[in-house]
Length: 59
Length: 204
Image (tube, each protein chain N blue to C red):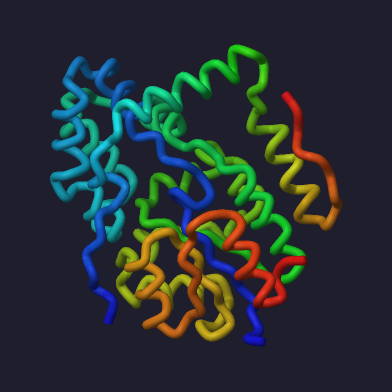
């Protein structure tokens, strides 16, 4: 019987400095035009699911 | 080699990162309340746990969320806010897509029905791969690691426990799957996942 209590992602304290660092990195990538929109990512995954070896989408 | 016909993925911190800070900051802006107060009222009060276990339908969940937030949040606002926190993990999604060449793939997340009803908006990449085989714990009236949720989910996906591989970053959840008769993999990253899948003949 598995009833072990483990902290969920909602219970783990946030590392504010690390969160800020990652947010800054992500914002910088998006500002630099490196963001990939959901539609492109979705289409890429559907190609992979059909067995087609296609490169990841670029921004 | 154990034959696997169904691969069941966890969602948070396996297929997407959950950006709690971004979500709370947006809710604080919306409601005018401090993020810590919102977190306590919604996430440490037991409210989300009840919803994940299927004790609240979508309407009751949204109304309860707004009450605890102190702001009458609309469905559109809730969806936009929830989507802010969902950051896809492309490398693992690509592995999932490749696994589809060998087995059926599905997702089982501890979540409430509002997430399931709007998954195509909240996480379109995942919905494209899983479609109707996207499951939330609330559909089954129990949350991981309760054994019932695995067995009901596998049945809903048309699989059998012995031929199902369950992947989760929570050891308790993987232990629950093993106890229910599924195969299990504790997710620690893409490299280890690829090796595990190769062991089942599910990856090149």
